[in-house]
Image (cartoon, rainbow, N blue to C red; front, side, top):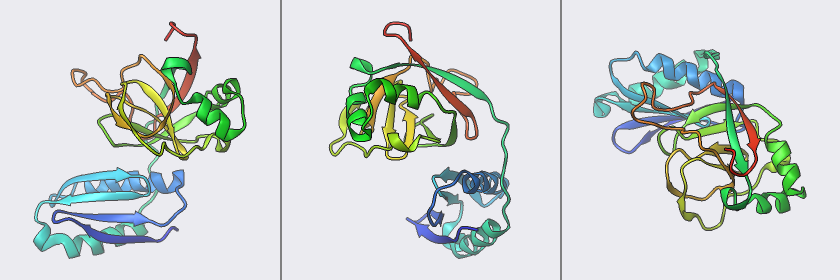
Length: 218
């Protein structure tokens, strides 16, 4: 079992953070712990992250130390949660104006742009958690050759629907925003729509497959 440490975050929350490495099995246990915390009356919100969980408390001045002790104990007792998983295909136009950093990823990996596209679209990804902005999926399972550092200088504006690579993960920007990931493609599929009954297209545990499209098809 991975060791965990708990600490205060600001004046209202506590955090449980796991030691590396990041694994899907640990993430499943974080999902289970998040589910358990949602039923606690003293918890305002439990927010799962990558190898961590942040718990916002209703009465942090009185409950913080007890929450740290309880989080540590519950983590040691927690089991993996296998959520109901949906299979979602995401059509993507790769390269060109849709993915201006495809060449950067190709150069870093020693592959051609065509090989990068084929490799990126060859595997099934798992949504580890949603964060950064509403509906932004952090996807685990990126093939190792495609691991590419974030840009040294973030862009001021990344269009909604842009598919990017940031380190060992790939993801999709649901909304226009500044961002520092390497941009390799774009999808017309809406990742977040506040008018839908379930605004975020994806949920933790969903399986995602990227489907390459010709320019103008996506």
